[in-house]
Amino acid sequence: MQEGGGRMFADPVTRLWTGCICIAAICMSLTQICMHLYRYTQPAHQRYIIRILFMVPIYAVCSWFSLVDRFFSLYLDTFRDCYESWVVYNFLSLCLAYVGGPGNVVNRMAGKEVAPSWFAMTCCLPRLPVDGNYIRGCQRGALQFVFIKPIIAALTLLLTWAGVYGDQEIKADKAYPYIAFVYNMSYTIALYSLLLFYLGAHDLLRPFKPLLKFVLVKSVIFLTFWQSILCATLVANGTLKSGEDGRALQNVLICCEMIVAAVMMLFAFPSSDYAEAKMSGIGFMTNIGHAISLNDVVSDTVHQFAPTYQEYVLHGTEGGAPRKVRMKTHIIMGQEMIAARAAAGGSPGVGVGGEALGGGG
Image 1: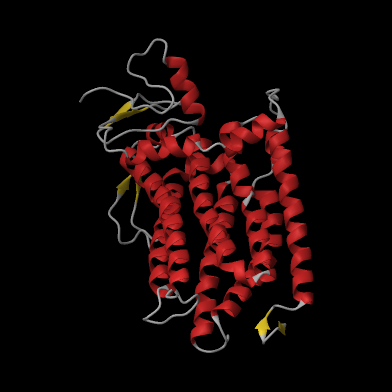
Image 2 (image 1 turned 90 degrees about the vertical axis):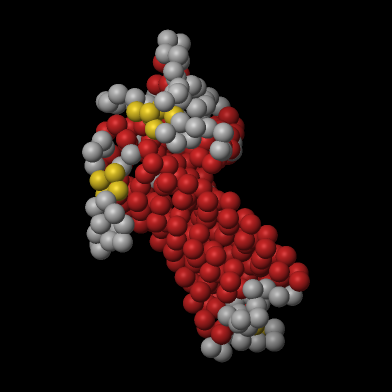
């Protein structure tokens, strides 16, 4: 497993078997993605599913090419790690689309509270009512990771070029441990936000069998991060000779894990769930364009963080009267957007396309 000056996993045999595993994982994932695009009957759900499914090809390609070309491994791994923040955001958005939007959660879970629990890791929190503030906090927790991770990635590259990053080196005079700490905090907040949303809305999510989806997404991201910490520890105690070997070990592990992830994705996000619905007749390329469009992300970001919005009204598609929340705004999506558009012709207090809803207090 060592070649070229004692470098780990630089031999042709390792590249061959990891390459075969990656090709198999990529073929399974791309086939599943194409089936979702062909059966694109629920765009509000499937655009997020497709983005999540792309995690396997991106992880597999970046990890394998990092083994082949060690010089570009840091850049490829940085791009791969940025995509995991994108997966966290899209998974939360998918869960919101499943339940019809934040308004449905608040209307249908009115009066529910998330109680402190050791098992659910909420023991240090007060009783949390599942309301507009709660849902907004979950969305913000996921979105912050989307923006902090690219900033961390840019800092990593700059510090590497400056010669002070110290890849996989846990030393006080190197930037790696500090970057890893900030990343760990942001990543923990994002995954904890997913957990809180699941605890608050799991009754509504039950028809969509969310547990396997939740465990799968969290496991891939969890393993990727803690494997990097383990590899850094092995470098620090001398088990591995250099940060380059530590990164190579992590890439081999990810290559192996992607074949497992690809198989699990088939069960967690089956395209057969959408096979019986009426086909829209929209072209395959149009479906691709909708799935990769970033309009929803831009709109969501503005509505979650822009200081110009002062309050909004939560509109649900099922049950309950509209609720005014004195915060900033609310982005409508999926079935909730359809309901808002239908009401826009006769209800003056309803905005369309994610604008602030509601009037003065």
